[in-house]
Image (cartoon, rainbow, N blue to C red):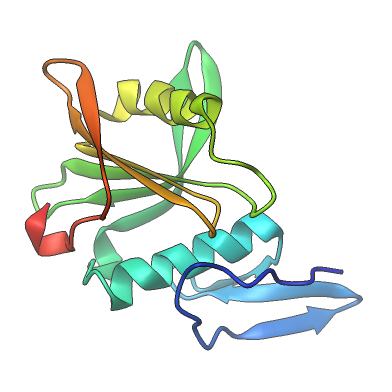
Length: 152
């Protein structure tokens, strides 16, 4: 059974249920109950933080969008769009026990080679890494904070 780790994100009043010894969390964006894994715990907290603290519109957040990378089907955890339909932020969520390392950043960067988002965010719920991308020049710089939606 899942024992939630306290995260470095504000708490939210999630709807958590249990059926046949399986714990579920209600995803308010997809409007369905999902098995509550450590990664899902992080993803749901980060989504709520985007909405509540950073004022990201719910309708512009895509969860687990597919992409093709090197002829393989992959899935990005969270993609955020602007009102023009452009991808502005790619967010990669990991379970709290997974360290945010160079290889995690490289994975997100490979995904972003397809998406071309202006921001890459990595989180395991305990540590958050924010990188502003210069897609045209192919470089980036790390920032201590993630911008509010209106500042993207």
